[in-house]
Length: 230
Ligand code: IYR
Image 1: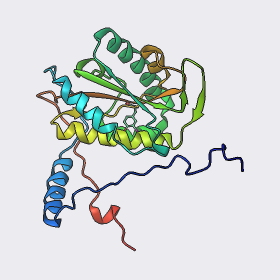
Image 2: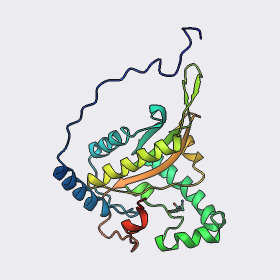
Image 3: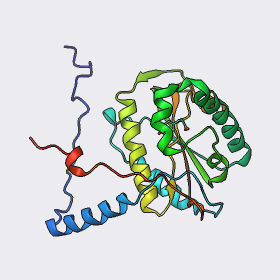
Image 4: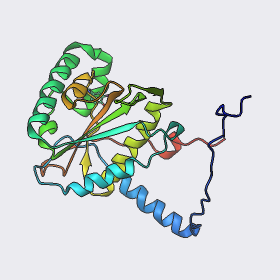
């Protein structure tokens, strides 16, 4: 092979990784604390108009951006939307899509699955929560100057992990969030003027819960139903 041809491993330059080894008691304490805090997380649909310190949201996005990703390509863009006019346009377009969904596109089985959640086509949280984070998945890399493209790998998995970390970080900061996935979501690319390599992945309103917020009375599967040992 020509010595100038890139080969697998040719740019591999590892550096040492020596995190402190945690005493197991400390790990267990941390795990118990985290597990209790995370069990309190609920998806919230009614938000307070109380302001949220933007640093909390930016810090949570910084946590999400530490997620592992396919080939470390970090194929995500987080758009933090506060402009009331932009949010009004997002709400109008989302509600138009949701109306079509609830009036037919979802179908009876899907509607039955959603019934315990009490969702419908009204999405007031899109304008009422102090922040909207619109997460975009970069389907491929695009250099907007040259038009050069290259493939991204495991995009949905990578962005899904990042969103999970985002929701965790928001919750640990005392904030509530909703993972909203209007379908189709193309209107988000148009309104937010995103390039053609990006596809909307989720819209996440963030804020404090409204004083009179309610959540569906749901329980989580016990661990012995989700954890198998072989
Ligand atoms: N996107 C719709 C419907 C919906 C779908 C699922 I799956 C949910 O868990 C909740 C809602 C909506 O946002 O109402």
